[in-house]
Image (tube, rainbow, N blue to C red; front, top):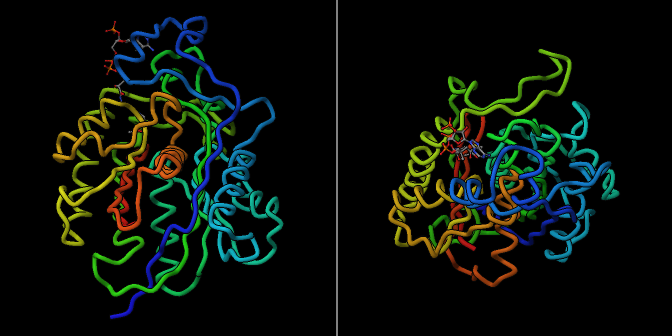
Amino acid sequence: MSVIRSVIAGCGSYLPEKVVTNKQLEDVVDTSDEWIIERTGIRQRHIAAEGELTSDLALEASKRALADADMTADELDLIILATATPDQTFPSTATRVQAALGMTHGAAFDVQAVCSGFVYALATADNFIRSGQARNVLVIGAETFSRILDWEDRTTCVLFGDGAGAVILSAHEGEGKNTDRGILTTHLHSDGRYNDLLYVDGGPSSTKSTGYLRMKGREVFRHAVKNLADVVGESLHAVGLAADDVDIVVPHQANKRILDGTAKKLGIDPEKIVMTVHKHANTSAASIPLALDEAVKQGRISTGDVVILEAMGGGFTWGACLLRW
Ligand code: ACO
């Protein structure tokens, strides 16, 4: 049976120039390089320059993804941008990127699922492609989390960074089998009961201000490993594959201990887990496309490989995307 599959035709990423090390944060809050490395694996993070916006990071990543796919913005039908740190409350950051790319056709919109945003955006794009409503979609994850951090709260400000990543998804014909190239399955979940474990204490409708990130880290950690292992298992089951069939996992980069714990629970070789959290910290919706781009550029992913992207974030939201490269 002939089916439409969404294949990643190109990817790109962008990090702000400025790097802030754990050591430098010792001058900002009561913390230590040792504490941060031991609890999170993070060694440094990139921070956007003053005036450098989420859309600026997104635009650079998008240009690189288009170049990698050997495409121009004229060929895109849709832009979906995942972010929890938009330039403005409205209009969407996606429409700013659309304008900057010189694209006046098609549509562009933002998706908000915090750290799971990129997986949510990919799943949305995949549905547009499989239903025949779009052939080429630019999917972006871009964040400037440094702007919503309380730089006096050592329990959160050491954990996050800024950055952007993007992929081009293109329609290809498949046979409807798990040997097809492209996205084989996506699975999204949320449970709003956990809203108060990870949130921003402001917003246009509540405080008329932006607010700062607040988190009960230990509680988030407890849910993360279980939810991520469950959704990866669900994805493998949906397409009749086993953990041993997975060639590479590109997880959301929140914390090395979450990545290690999830791999262990699933019985996946830690060598197959892409790890960038030590260099980028947690860049929320940008972390998966940033890590994916690095893995691709390092030659770690080959045609035919089974790739899993998985994430969990505020809401709670969580999800996975299983694809064959
Ligand atoms: N430097 C030094 N000490 C610190 C710091 C810091 N930056 N932050 C907290 N501490 C102290 C605490 O005050 C506490 O001190 P106390 O025992 O005297 O009260 C002690 O360290 C232990 O604090 P815990 O919060 O219990 O430390 P824990 O081992 O749970 O690690 C962490 C905290 C790293 C936040 C962990 O819980 C975690 O990673 N949780 C997951 C959260 C996460 O990654 N969220 C990202 C978004 S969701 C996602 O992406 C999955």
